[in-house]
Length: 329
Ligand SMILES: [Zn+2]
Image (cartoon, rainbow, N blue to C red):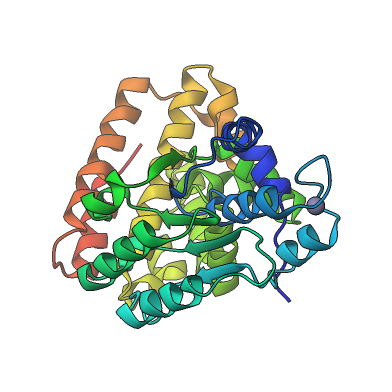
């Protein structure tokens, strides 16, 4: 059973919780909210939090323990309806069904809350249907629309909603969360710096490849400084799996990690140790590093240029051969 947990929301989006609490206390909850922010920023949790504020039966709302709150937390409250895209699209029938459901008077006169996840996936026919429904929805009906891409949401929807922006998570928060879930410390820092989202990190770990890519980067980083083996040789020993990888995301991740390594090296030479991401590997090689910052920046720029090339249709083997021959310390 999927449960809602408000811990992460309270921990990371205090300003949103405060806004909702204050609006509720002052009787200023609006009928349509548009929650916008990056993936993994607890927007859906916040929608359920708002539902708990509106439906909780205790004096201190939301108590998170009364019958109403419990049903919301267990995602089985009959007055809270979640609509998500099916096959990546919110269909017109979904909006129409929602409209039908809400046009019936609620049996117990309680507030009702509908949540539409990924509102940007609504076609314009769906959006029109939704807008009509929003205008006709009764005073006790509340809507929360959610999006990761505010600018893909139709302007007519944006203008009829109160937009609430969710903060990007700081890498430190993501790293702490990953560590608390049992992920090794350095891996947690590395992952936290290439995404801004815990779920995505966990998905990547489950898929498996990401740990291999981190390993490959570490070996390459070590060897670049120690000058034991050429990066290209290491790539052919440990990175061959990347050559058959058609998903560009993994190539981007590998380059992001190389960039993170060179940045870590730069921070080391600049004595900004708190910014170092590859802590273990940098510790191991720190005594061998006698490289002027300017040179590290030069190499960093080379990789950034190569990363641009990844956007085009390229021969991936040739790409790596050229890049790994070009990069040196
Ligand atoms: Zn309650």
